Length: 283
Image 1: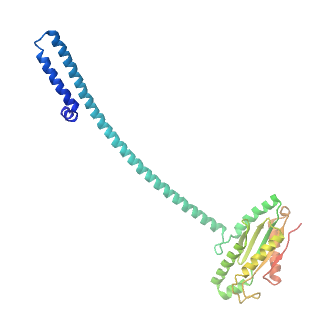
Image 2 (image 1 turned 90 degrees about the vertical axis):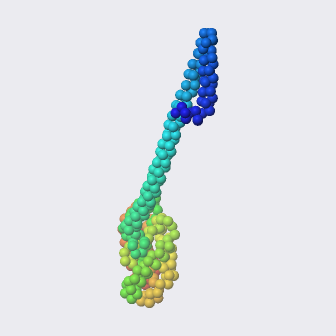
Image 3 (image 1 turned 90 degrees about the horizontal axis):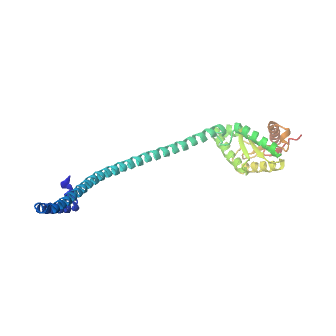
């Protein structure tokens, strides 16, 4: 270790030269007066001790340097391992987020299966019952009018029988998209009630407003110009609509309004089809 220190540190080499000269001086004064000899001997020993301390300092500094290097290497390794763990954790987080998105999509799909009609994409009867209950309570609380429209496709059985069930399904889908697009307000709601029947909820809408909306729906469907040469009404697909409204929801049940709309629809079918009829629910 000493030899390595001499090669490594010039100061050690220089101190050794000084120590050698001091030793020669001590030998030279060994036969001189005692006082001078003792003084030089003391200085020589002190210098030698100082140089030994320098050697010791260099040795321990090299030891600490080695330790520091090891500490740095260990720290670097720890940092590398930490980065690897962070990368793995980030990958897990990304996988978890992906799984959450997939789960959300699956839940939305499941929700759609429970609330949507699979053929037309409109809401189903079960969802209609939930929404009408909510809107009926809202009408009672806010003292607002509420209206329902029952809709039936005219002569749909002859259409299905002659054009085929696939054409019938396509017809239902096209009409459903059209009617859904005819509703302009966010809370307006349409559902497939069953077969070729549909129902519309119009919150905060009186009879006049409901009739206006119903006429727009009827006209939009007729403008599709879906051929129907087996119809006894027009050469194109038509619909009949029954409208019922009330401004006194607190005095009735929504089922009573639904019955009135159904009666209005029956009246429209019996009096020529391709028209709107109104039956108001009053106390």
